[in-house]
View 1 (cartoon, rainbow, N blue to C red):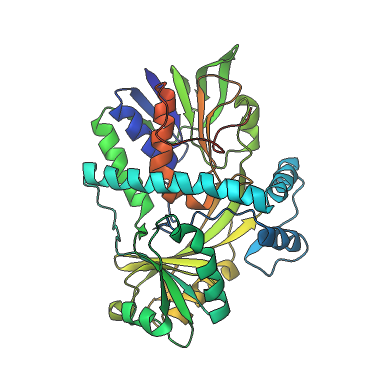
View 2: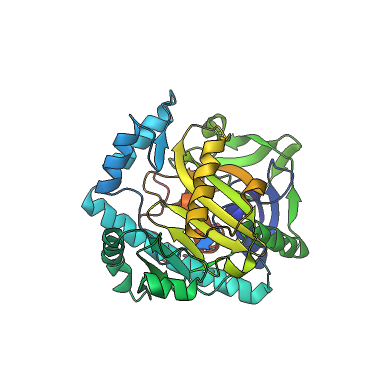
Length: 413
C-alpha cells in the first residue's frame, strides 16, 4: 500500500518509520526545508512518562478563566476573534470536572506508558544517537507546600507501579551539585523518565526511513485534497498532486484553511511555547539530569555543551513571534537554579505552536474520509507520545487492532 504522511515532525517521522517497517511504500510531505523544523525543533526534551496528568482539572479551569482577564501567570490568553478558540475553550472547561479528569488520566497514562516502551524498543533496534539521558528526571519544588502537593498528586502514578522518589534539598544537591540550595525545598525524582534532543532524533530516524525507501518531499506545502465520496484520492501540494491509498495527517497545529479538506478533524488549537538554548559556561556545575522547576512550570535539559530551557503556554492564535520578556523568564529561572552555569548573552530563542486538544490527549483514526488517518493533538507531550502514537496509526492503516485500548483516544465523528 502507498501511504502519504503529511508532516515531518516527531509524529510524522515516527509514523513513516513504523509504516515502512510494515512494508508500505511511504512518502512524507512537509512545507519546511528540513525535518523537525516546527514544534519538534527546540522542545523541552523530556520524555515524562511519570507525569501523564491531563491539562483540564478543576484548578486549571480557574487558571484558564483568570487568564481571560490577566496575563501575569504561566498560562496567557490573548483575545481571539477565532470562533475555533472559543469552541475549544468551552470543550476544555467541560472537561475540567473530577470524573472527566479521571477518564482522561487513564487514557493518557495508558498511551504514555506504551509510547515510552515503543521508544526504548526503537532506540535499541536502530541505535540512534540523540544525546539520550536515561538517568531519570528531577521535578523541583521551591516550597514545602508545593512539594507536598506534588507528592500527593504522584500517588496515582506510584499506585500504578511508577517509581517516584521524594528528595529533600540536600538529596537533590547530592545529585545536582551546581543547584542553588537557597532556591529549592526538594524534588520528586522519576528514575524511569528520560530526555534527549527530539530534533536530532527525528533527523536520524529520517535517515533510517530513507534507507528503507521512504521519500521526503520538503518545502512542499499542502493546500488541499481531492475527494471522491468518502475517500481522499489526492493531496494537493505546492509541488503537485500526490496520489496514495491512505493518508496520515500529522501536521500538528493545522491552519484553519485546511479544515474543510480534513473531513472531521480533531479539535486541535495552537498553544505557543517558548524555549531558550544556552551555551554552558561552567560544565562542572551544569545539570546532570533533565528537570523541571514545578513552581515556575519551566523545564530544562542538558544537551551536550548546551542547556535547553522551555516554558510558557500562550493562546495567541497562529503567531509564532516571541518577545525579550518571554525568553528572559526562562533564562532568569535557570540562573536562579544554577547560578552562572550558562552564557545568557548567547541564548538562542525559539517559539513554537503546540497542537493541543481540549483534553490534552491526541486523536487517532478516521473522520469523514475512510482513508485519511489522524495522528494529531499530542500538544506539550509530543516527545513522550510520539513512538506509541506512530505504532497505533500504523496498525490502523494496516487494518490491525492496536496493542492498547483506544478508549478516549479516537477521533469523534
